[in-house]
Length: 136
Length: 146
Image (cartoon, rainbow over all chains, first blue to last red):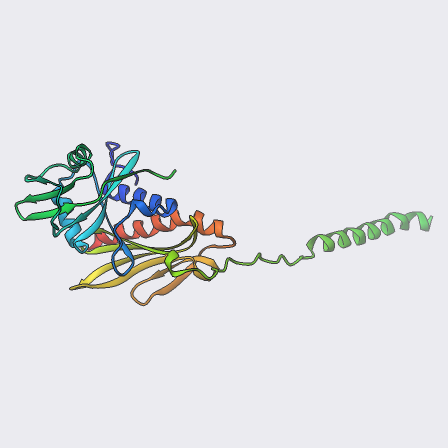
């Protein structure tokens, strides 16, 4: 249940681990996006998925979400808005990339928003990432 | 001569009587009082958290928690499925209100049997993971049948 036969996390097993950790750690900063109704939408992603797949899941859950990228020993979260807002410091990504590489680009550009603009994707990531180890 | 022959019989009767008394004492049931179940104390609405995940585009898992100073006081994990445009119906949920962890199934919120009693706040905290897993297991089965 916790991993595929190859030992890699599946999205289902990653979802379980992320949600259980969030429930036990109670860290406000991990999920900074709160909707007006008080709920925190979460999209769980794996590093080897494409960022366009994640954008489509963010659109499905309402257009804005806390994205949790699940690695084997930890996960990293950032906020994604489907409808990109203007920002002064923006790094534009104009082609589809893996989520793992997207995180590398984020870390290479601290303090700057990322805008994803390619094909029918137009999304931004305005908040810096927060990393967290899984709860035991 | 007669007394000698009666002696073992009397002795046997006395031994049986004393054995019956011992058995009765052993079998006497002392009612064991169940410890008081956990009752959720009053809390500030800002201590309530709700997280929503959408493992696929037609199903959501909603995790509602009451957390005070990092301590989990109450929770409910609910699986809902899309039945129309922006219309979601409950498939199942597990919560720990009324002093026990129990499951509800279907849109009618039918209550199932007690999964485990909740005596302390620590029981609330320690039962969360298994409750989440049970709802997620059910979701995976449900997804397979969709």
